[in-house]
Image 1 (cartoon, rainbow, N blue to C red):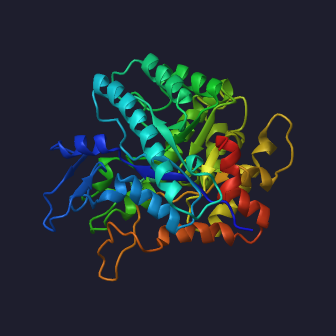
Image 2 (cartoon, helix red, strand yellow):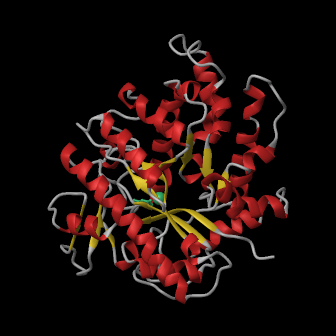
Image 3 (tube, rainbow, N blue to C red):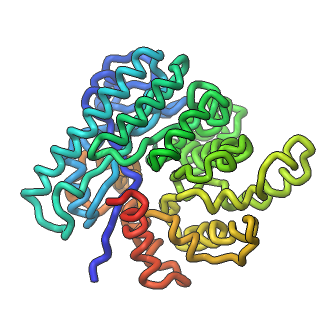
Length: 395
Ligand code: URA
Ligand code: ZN
């Protein structure tokens, strides 16, 4: 039986956002100042080589549909790519969030029309493209605007949650001003997708900083900075008691939870030994890992197996102190691609930008990783590849 493939981690920039990024002279921006003459997207805090080459795969719905067809992806839930609206002033962020959400709705509608002409999935065309909405999270925005936006996302037919970075309203996600956001998202049952952008900050890329002196491209910030940022942002939510106050909150964490799963017992020990924190939470920190959802963008079967085990033991630390159950972990994991980031590279190191023909290694690696977890049954693999997403998002 063909496995249903649902991609919960797939990015775009809307055409309107692309125009805005093209009009800017400081990062984040899209520019043509590089020596190779290509358009570059410069978004990371300390961008190397002027940024990465971009093309229509970042904004054109035809490209996304072609990518899905080529990789047998039945449903994609697209989200705006980083750094979202973080850099805007308050007024612009509120207006842009409204516009972006309308544009995302239209994007899904256009995809439906393209799927009508295409074969390749048993899923009806109008159900194959969904989107995470965007929230006006930027400095100076009143939290009421964010809450209103959650209501609007809930009412939008193609939007099934919202993506967010780690900055919130400028002071991180443990900012008490965000309390109404968690409350509203939990009440509406919307999935919030937590995604990194800042890595370990600009200090890391100084000559004497963590990333060292060699030109290692984007490797260190993406492979290590992103997962640490995600781990820190999620831990700050846990330590702020957000999951004690809002146990129904549905938070999907990028890149399989980043560094958090592997560090969760260390976190628990540090909490238990710290007089500032040891009595703050209702449960051992490891319990809260069982309240989260995770993408399966980890690229290796051993990592996926380990993350599922770590999530599955969360209930050992819950109110009933039940024994660990890896099935509970597997039920929280969801296939993703991170398209259009990580396109194939040629032997000479150049990136294949607007490719419409290749099978992307970054995709097949993640499918194969799921398919080759030795302790998972076929049903477990089906679940992670698509069925978990069907139930989480009500697809
Ligand atoms: N690089 C980014 O900047 N964002 C992603 O989502 C993936 C890679
Ligand atoms: Zn991503």
